[in-house]
Length: 442
Picture 1 (tube, rainbow, N blue to C red):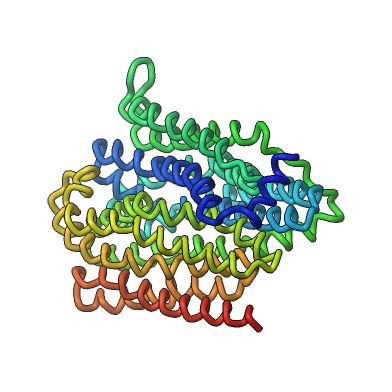
Picture 2 (picture 1 turned 60 degrees about the horizontal axis):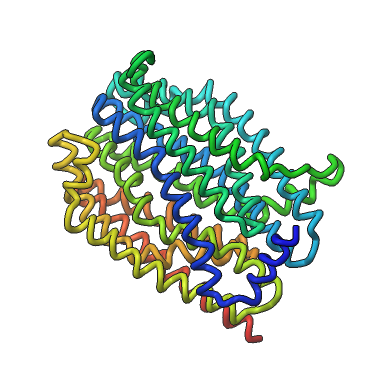
């Protein structure tokens, strides 16, 4: 545990840029690999069937729900462990990790049971194609019931990250993604002794990859849970810090489902475009997402130590770096949207809808830096209410209503909802951040 204590202490004494530059690349690689799961599926499934590609877009909100619960709970574990390490409560920090594992098992069990009853109604309101419905049912059942791997891996990864170990989670996710990439064409199209499983093969490959990552991180990431009568304190603490992250990602489920329902009134090609956008967007947002992951334990540690000037330095550094790196995404979405879409779909209709859509959505990337970084800041300092307000504002009060109103004008205008919602939320988040740091001087 000596390494863990030294690492936690460096959060409060090391140079901010050096700490984040050291922490962020492994997380960035891990998130890049994580993004590969759905994207690789889309690449091969797009060559298998256009209806299959639509099916993946339909199921994507359910995969986000799994991610919301798994990663959000992991974020709570990460933040609470970092704060306990800062307070030299090492035993409590490790019990926090153990409690996170128990919660992961419980969430997986409940979600698997619920999926048996609710997956078909969900799928049928999201697409009009009978074949897409059938493919979505096949894919969705497997990835939900097989989601134990991602639930456990998310907790194990955050336990390692709270201890400053960003390398092992990266190795695990690289291994899981490599497994997925290798198995996808084998199981989808049938190679060698393996039968062609189609859309089900893509789901099986994803689940196996997730289990590989869980086994690698779990080998040294397992922590003993606290005794039953003392578990309430840990659950409360985990979700106090993790709820904003869960809410933020759960709202993705809400608004992508709502947007899919609106787009279903136009054409399934629009649903496919939306699904492709979110999968491609994840690659261009990786630098910002990685920084968000990395700054949570560092911010939490320094805020606990009342090192407010370091907290401001962390946010300034993160905003400048995120905005600089976001330029790549803006260029690609504005200059080569057809090339991006063509990687996955050969449909003329998807290209016709997608090219102007991507150019309008690309305008949202710069303001997204502020609208997404500010909730992370409030989550890290334990201000759950402010973080939740920003998340709800961005994805419920702004995006869905604006998208719906613009859909009344026409499909081509709906995509303007993305830059509009990011600008509004970014302005509100910046104002709340300035108010918070002014309160520190008092």
